[in-house]
Structure formats: C-alpha cells, structure tokens
Figure 1 (cartoon, one colour):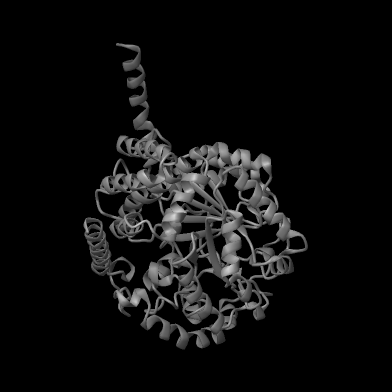
Figure 2 (cartoon, rainbow, N blue to C red):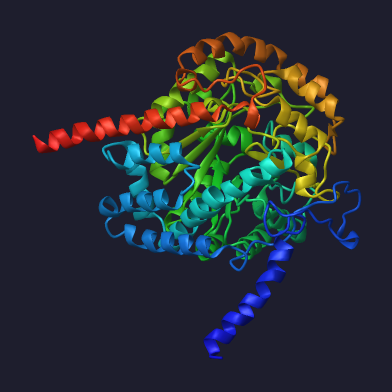
Length: 552
C-alpha cells in the first residue's frame, strides 16, 4: 500500500468514531433509530435521553460540503481583482450549490442587486471586496453561505421535522456578565459582574449547536471582550462557524485586531447611541472617542465591523437621521443593527421607551435609507414583516446568559432550562420553548411581533403555562409586572402598526398569518414561493428592458 493510500485508510478508520460522537442520539442519519445516551454521559437533571453531542470539524463534514467551501473560497479569492466582472460569478456558484432551492427567494433578491448594479447595495458588495482582508472575507463568506445557510439550514429543518420543535439559525450567548462600563438602562447591568460561562461550556454549546446545523454565534453580555483570550480560542476551535459580538468597543486594540485577522471568523458590532453627546450621556464620558478609535483600528486592519444601536425616546432624533448614516459609512461601518429600548430589568427607566410616532419615524426612515445608502441595516422589531414576526425561542435564535439559563430571547429573561442541566435539544423541547413554538407568530400583524412589547399579556400566558421562572439572578420580577410596563405602549402602537401594515411589503405579498395555527409555525410556504416567483419575474422584466436598451 502506498504512503498516500495508507494515510487515506487511516483517515477513513477514524471517520466512524468521529461520526458516532457527532451524531450521538440520532445515529448516522436523521432516519436512523434513536439510541439512548450512555448513563455515564447524562447531565444532572436531564430528562430527555436522546441528545446530539459532538464536535463539527472538517473531518465530520461531508465531502460535498468541503468541496463547496473550497470552491467558494477559491472563487472569492479572485473577486478583489475585478469585482464588477467576478461578483456575479459567486452568485452563480451559490445558485449551483443550493440544489434544493431552500433559499430561492434570497438568491432572487441578490440577483436583483447584482444583475442591475446601479444601486447602493451593489456599492456595498463591491466595498467588501476592496476594503476587507481577503482571508477574512473568504472565511466569513464561505462559513456563512456553506455552513450557516445552506448545509446548516438543511440540517436545522431535518431536526425540526424529526423532533417537532424549533431549531435556531443563531445562538446568542453571554460569556460573562462582567463589564467595564455601566450604561443607563442596560438590562445586563442588573445581573451583576461575577457570572461566567467557562471556556468548556461555551465550546460544548457550540459543539451541540453545530451538530444540529447552527453555525452562527453572537456574543452579548456584559462586555464579551472582557473574555478576549477565550473568544479567540473559540474562533480557533470552531473555524467553520461565524462569530459576531455586540461590544462597547472600548477594549478593541491592535493586538486584538491582529488576532481577528488571523482567525478570520469574528465580526464586532460596536454599540453607538448616535452623536458624542448621546453616546457619552448613556455610556460615560469619553466612550464615543474610544469607539471612534476602535473603528479606526478595525478599518486600518481591513476588518469588517458594524454598529449596534439602541434607539430610545431621547436619541431617536440623533440616530434617525441621514447624517448618522453618513457618519457610520465614513467610519467604515458595513452594517447597523437597530433595537428599540426595552424595559427589561426591574429598575428599568420607563421614560426611555420610544413613543409611537418615534417608532413610526424609524420604520419609514430605515426603509428609506435602504434605498440610498451602502449600509446593510436591520431593525430587530420593525423588520418583523420579513421574518414572520417573533423569531425567539429557537425559531431563528435564542439566548443563553452567563449563568447558563436558556432564555427564549435576549429581552425575555424567563427560563425553564439551564445548559448545565439540559442539552440544547432538551431545551428546544422544553415546555417554555414549545409554548413559544405553538403560539408564534403572536400577532397576524407582523409589525406587532413581540409578546412583551406589542402583545404584553401573551408573554405572561406563555410563561405561566410553561411554569418558567425569571432568570434574572439579582432582581427577579413577576412576569405580570414586566408585561404591565409595556401595556400602555402596546395599546398606543396598535393603531399605528395596523395602519402601516395595510401598505407594508409583507401584507402586500400576503405573508401575514392566520389566527389558526398553520404547519411550520404558521408560515404558508406556498405564499413564500409565490413571492420568490414575483421577484424573479421582476428581475426578468428588468433584464429584458436592459437587453432591449443595449440592443437599441
């Protein structure tokens, strides 16, 4: 036997053992007979004996996945040389590897941008290939497209169907409750500064998550970068994942930037409250200048980064302006994630909650900016029409705090599972998460998605029906008291949201849900496919016009 063949045989002998660990509880495929986990491996308090354990690494990934990832990385390597010529090629490559048409609608939207490049979105895409380090771009894109989206999405759906529960696209987790700042209205501040997930616990969460198709991990806190060294170790241990971090930015330095260049799979989202006065007013004197310095460091190292912006009654007039967008673009920001202020902890100042007219302003403003600016923008609450309402409890994401409690949402601190006592799959099938699963969406108007902010007593019912408890370790509060804080706001927002919903894109294309429960969490996928068809028809019509113009 040749040396190469011997190496191949040795590799193959190891595959079954790796796959056994990888698919423990499921078998070699989702159709396989379930096998109980050995008693010695059970966690204290775990009631469900069938779990997914193991570590996803390149040896565990199918040959097809590895070839697809390799092909995508090679393709990405050429794009910086001639973006206009080569950008369409990556979309053709993605079209080819999405053989099941799982993301037909998303691909159609990208075709609409790429095939007609005279738009702000195309300028943003070009910026990625001209301003971002090639290794980082290759790593993030290939992990995001191949693992987090295509193969991961398929695996998530298989497990959803097998176990009848939600399986998230992303997991938010708090490495620590510690923070070097004390921002006004921050819910994490009520947790104290002494809670931590160990490196081993974070690693285990990701091992379990990737086994079920979740390759996107988002750090919150506390301030995650208090744990810089462990965060980089996790990036190294899971090179097939994408990591995003909500951070105040004050701990970003050149050494950390060099680490990010090396691992290639980590993206910071820096918290900004608008201008210097607004940011320092909430976060402390001098923080805004430290944020600008962090952005400069990241920009000079050709690293991608974004902004996380919580808009309140006091800063809407600062963040909801074109000047703020222009400032972000000038700093090198590639994306902005908007959140409205939530009165989560027991002592939260209610006066920071936005008024209906302010929320409506952000609704119109963000959509307007999306047509003009080369900045990718998400609004966690006001984009409910694009994701069919509430995305919590594993429908698209969940939250694990620094005490190990598994919450349905980063803003909903009620739990009936802890990662130190249950596996992720057990948590997905817990009473609390299944109550969410049964009730999502919480409103047929997708601009009223939240069971707390927009439908306050829906959350109370879910929590009480499931027997969940408050996961705030310092000042736990009864769910009725929490919901009561939002009752007046919800009533005031309802007529505004109902008026906006009538003319919204989601309602226009019939993506609203019925009051009765439909399969797949009330999402009518026939309607979704029809929307994809409409988009493709629009693209075909635009291309026909372009061809006619070119011919003339």
